[in-house]
Amino acid sequence: MDKLELKGKWNEMKGKVKQAHAEFTDDELEYEDGKDDELLGRIQKKLGKTRDEVVHWLKSL
Image 1 (cartoon, helix red, strand yellow):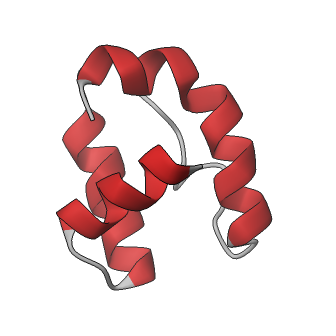
Image 2: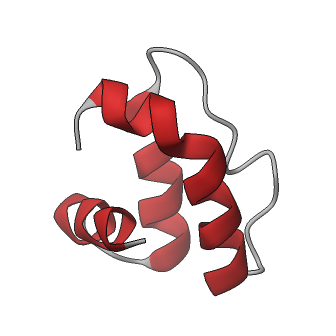
């Protein structure tokens, strides 16, 4: 997932992530410009999945 795609769609995707996994907090899903890898890392850690699995899952939302 390229950075522009993540940045542009994140607010919509964030809502879908919270619907699928209500245990995520707003802080864990906070998007900061230039820190895409940190966001994906937080999601990875919480879900126990690889980066590729997380990216694939987010693309499917």
